Image (cartoon, rainbow, N blue to C red):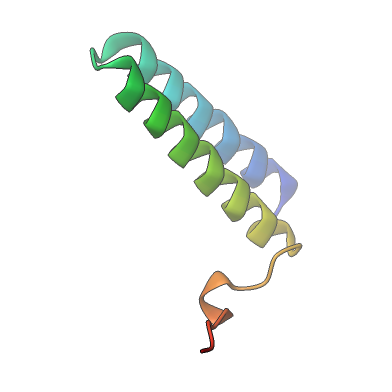
Length: 63
């Protein structure tokens, strides 16, 4: 993935999260959970995009 696309996606996600936090009224606990989920999802996506983390679906839990 080109670096420019990565930066554009990060900017779009950041602006969307800012607009949701700023203009949509919700409880602060829900807002915090939303922020954590979005940040974790974006971090995993960035790591996969740059190739530092393999495909998440390839992990298997064994008994």
